[in-house]
Image (cartoon, rainbow over all chains, first blue to last red; front, side, top):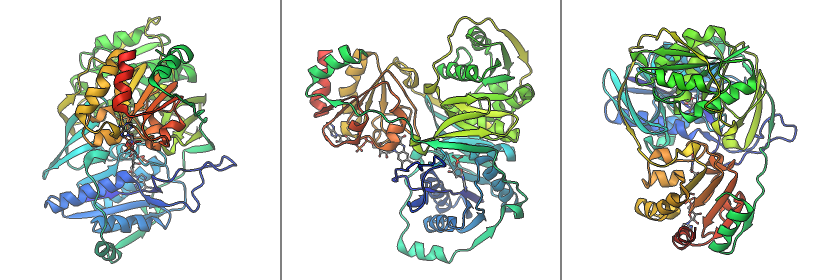
Length: 249
Length: 310
Ligand SMILES: Cc1cc2nc3c(=O)[nH]c(=O)nc-3n(C[C@H](O)[C@H](O)[C@H](O)COP(=O)(O)OP(=O)(O)OC[C@H]3O[C@@H](n4cnc5c(N)ncnc54)[C@H](O)[C@@H]3O)c2cc1C
Ligand SMILES: Nc1ncnc2c1ncn2[C@@H]1O[C@H](COP(=O)(O)O)[C@@H](O)[C@H]1O
């Protein structure tokens, strides 16, 4: 079975982003970009399913600027077999991405799509669910365990009160949570091999998708700064402050 | 103008997050209707009818909603959606499963995790783990929103007297089924609703130590217990304890961070707490940058002493 893994290029999770002085957005010029951590987990999971003989081919797909090729090469270095770049300089919001992915799904006919639960730039947590809705498929978000058979996927999900297990008919959508797996490091030989794997490029127009944003960002601001407080010398002082100054106990 | 609030409930009672969403709907203005999609859920619907500000409750009662699966819940919302300009759900595991699905079925954008209503089309939401706040304006005729509970004070559970109207429940989607759940049972207040949270990190060293050191303190303060991702990953506690960008967002009156360094992903989940206390042996730990009261100490000495002296 074929697995499709959408991967997003985002500001690396170690970078503390800065808001631009004109409040038009955050400054991402000259900052390190990486694959969204949840997407890495998605690629890793697909590769493990392939290693277990449960999947035959893994196709990574990324929507965005030309540099998303690097993200796709990265996915191929972890073990994806080929990549599809949906190239666009436009701002792609989750609904548009879901529509683009739907078009790719219709071409590629995967039985399973594994996405990250959330992109750490927009923190939207939408694309997988939207794609599932557009395709009329079942969805298992926040996966911490995935068991695949020829016609179902059984997923343990991290929900607010603990864990929940659901079974979905294939084809289906899974989104990854942090504890699903720990992605491997891409080795140098695999990075070299990835450079030779096929990478196709398409445009949103080729897929017949209108990606016009529905939301306009009016401004982006720094959140209110918390005043760093004081250090207290000992436990007795801490209790005294909590009782008499903060009045929270 | 009218708002539809997607209630989160356990068929018998409303989840606290629903009250915050009703408050956000009140900030938008207009009539507020609440959809309870459940099975044998008339008690939850009756509770919703009592909430201050609610004009009508729609009860979709049917077997398809027995396990609150998002495929069925989203179809249910779409079935009643035509009358509404705003559709709101809590930014919880449940709401995040349903709202994007609804939005896509309606061909509308979804705005996640709103923390402020500027006007009926314009909302503020955190991005980049809360390192920036974006003000976004929607050009869609219907706005589908998820609401960050900590940003809206809950609507009062009494004072309303709305009518409950039965609407036909949708059929099961047939594509998903519930298998099992392992829900953590606890006598403690729920993390996202607690007034005081005692939270532990990798500094605790093990699950045993986590429980031995933090439980007595939490007991004394009637506090909920939380954790950093590192503590969850190391298996000290279950996943639903995790506070942060990718865990739960909390804003209690008092947050006591014990043996937590204060990575931005953790701060994203707790920095709106009213008072923050940090206990850490490293004086340079970033957690001290947000703490109102910092105690540089070995937690294995300081926490038992604190518990004893309270
Ligand atoms: C995509 C992504 C999402 C993430 N999401 C989250 C999230 O939602 N929530 C989250 O918490 N993290 C999240 N993280 C992880 C985050 O980056 C940090 O790794 C994590 O928060 C660190 O946890 P910690 O503070 O417990 O551990 P550490 O950073 O190891 O800190 C342990 C602290 O304990 C102190 N200590 C040790 N021994 C003692 C002692 N005896 N007495 C007192 N102090 C002591 C140390 O000085 C240190 O400061 C995420 C990371 C990524 C990449
Ligand atoms: N531009 C994109 N290209 C490829 N995949 C994406 C893109 N945007 C989002 N995704 C996928 O959707 C997931 C959730 O993203 P979001 O809904 O934006 O939080 C990501 O982890 C990716 O798997």
